[in-house]
Length: 136
Image (tube, rainbow, N blue to C red; front, side, top):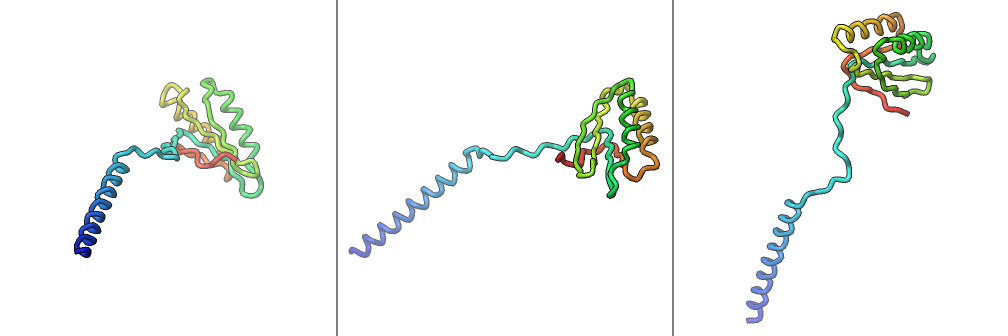
């Protein structure tokens, strides 16, 4: 008789403990989970990205001076973001070009920048790209 009572107690205890685990699992499934890390933001795609790179001798300073003179003298004054990323003065200039009113003006600006950059292997001009380097 004692064995039967002990067996019945053990089975009922096992059933109760299983039921409480299922309820606890339901509570954790429905409760909103607060995340400690922010959701990754979508990368910002810029209309024009001009990167002055170095191959051991520093970036092309003459071309950079001409490039900045052109941008500063442009009538629309296009805004840009600068990202300094290298040890030798490497820098990215990221343009949205939202200040340029027409597509024709935008294309003319990009072509002028490409002409300034022509002939230098230390300038990379990309269109519709994200700023690929992180600031130091």
